[in-house]
Length: 100
Ligand SMILES: C[S@@+](CC[C@H](N)C(=O)[O-])C[C@H]1O[C@@H](n2cnc3c(N)ncnc32)[C@H](O)[C@@H]1O
Image 1 (cartoon, rainbow, N blue to C red):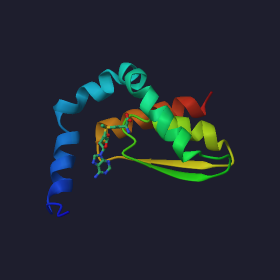
Image 2 (cartoon, rainbow, N blue to C red):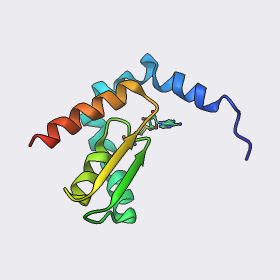
Image 3 (cartoon, rainbow, N blue to C red):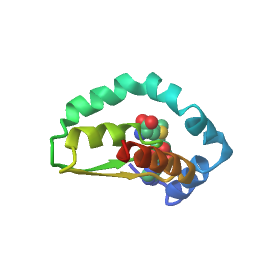
Image 4 (cartoon, helix red, strand yellow):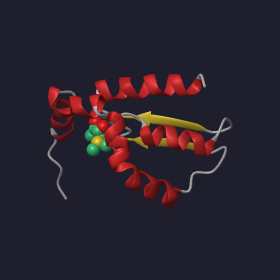
């Protein structure tokens, strides 16, 4: 399948535009809405304590934090996303979680 060369640029523009602001402002409600899909993905991936994981398209970080709980302190999870606002929100949640 051919992917247009500017596909990433289009996605970057889209996911950094105001259109995606609700992903941040409604993060808790969206996490609840999509939770069953995230749970199914995690059940299939079966992350184990001590593993190193990359979460591509981590958005506001719900799956990243779930993965961090699964791999524990001996593991490592790297969230990656093209959206600056969503990644900033995820980083804030990760800092709060890390301080608990
Ligand atoms: C539908 S959202 C899902 C976010 C998150 N995984 C969740 O379940 O809440 C899709 C995510 O993919 C990200 N994304 C799109 N294209 C990307 C790319 N080329 N590289 C990294 N992230 C990308 C978007 O910024 C957005 O956060």
